Every structure is written in structure tokens, then in C-alpha cells.
Image (tube, rainbow, N blue to C red; front, side, top):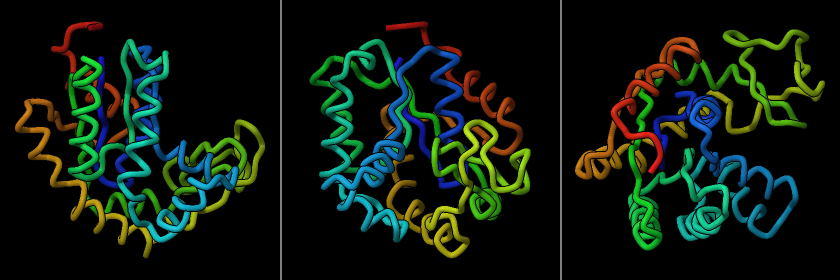
Length: 219
């Protein structure tokens, strides 16, 4: 099964991507993780991406498309995947559709996680990320056992620059302008399924699974 997740910042796509990939035994392709790894390793791609990410802007299509298409050819992706963070623009969506058509592996569904902007702001402005393992917490909804310390690896928690309230609101504006129009693109193709993203992680996961319950297991 090949599934794309999309929705506004703060909708919990990253968390749900991991949960769905585990539940369905699918490869997880998370462009955000790939970008952050490149930034941390100070690669050429990382330096280029950082200039955009630090301002809450989208990384240029050509950089993102090249990275994702290379990942699609790795062996663990062949039996199915959960794709989080891509596509975010119409050209990216068209590039993905063309690439999958060439590989005879079309998308099965696109899950759109829906949440009000103000809830998204509250979630992200309170988010803290582990510098070591990248696990995320929320000072209000999901605090660590010890303030400022990751429960899993003991790493330091920090607020990413793009999680400040001002930056979150800018990211939402970018989403509404550049990514939300993909609604119609995927709806036209009969792929779009909406998932209410408010509630517990378990509740949202069950809604997502229910949204794709009609799809046959496997290819």
C-alpha cells in the first residue's frame, strides 16, 4: 500500500506517520527527517535546505523531488510506504505521480489531517525536540518526565527555531497558499480521504486506519 499524509503544521502527521508505518508494516519516508539529517551533517544539500527551513519556507522543488525519488528506489519501499512531508506543491505532486507511474506503483490513498489553525499554533509553540534523537514532546499536552530532558535517550530538549509562534503562523500561511490547493488535485484522482486530527494519538490513528479500511491488503 502506498499512502501520502498531508495537512497543516501541527496536525500530528509525523507522529501518525510512524504509528501507521508500524501498524501496517510499511516503509516510512519522512522528508523532514532527511532534511534535518543533512543539516546536522552540514552537507551541500543541508546548507541549501537550511536557508529555507530556518525561515519556515519550503525547500525548492528540485531539491526535494530529487531526494524523494532516490528514496523511492530503495528496496524497503517496494512493498509499500507511508510518505510524510511530500508533496507540498503541485509540481511536487505531479513529479511524484509521474515517478510512481514509471515504476508501476501508483498511490492508493492520500490522508489529509484536518485541524484548526489555533490548535496547530498551540501544539507547535509548545513543542520541544530532543537534540539527540529528535523525539518530540509538548510542554502542555505531552511533557517529558523531567523538564528539558528526553525520556528515551536523556538528550537536551529545545524549541526549534521554526516552532516559535511567529514562525508557526508563517508556516500556516505558506501551507494554505502552497499545499492546501493539493486538495483538489488528489480529490480529482479519487485519492483524498480526510482525518480529524484533534484528540489523542490513539484516536487519530484509529480514524486514519478506518479511512483506508476499504483498501485491499497489499498490492
